[in-house]
Length: 65
Image (tube, rainbow, N blue to C red; front, side, top):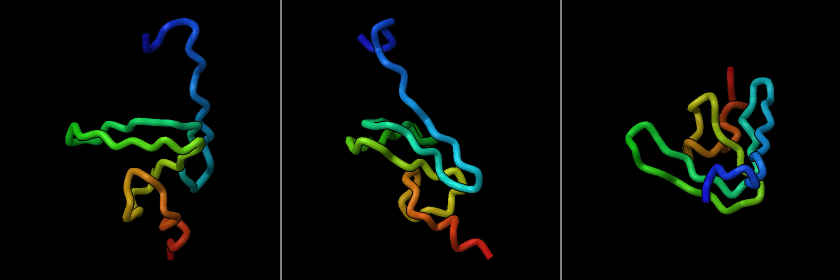
């Protein structure tokens, strides 16, 4: 059962000027209501919206001029 007291919380690491790093697997609901998922043990979620693979970070934030 989701959200039961025995579930371990997911850890999210916030980085200054970088993506949110989250322990996986994860399922992300997008603005249009669609969902994307990743079964990786750690995922990087884009916060700058520059990623070509949004919502996954592809390090496009590093190209900032």
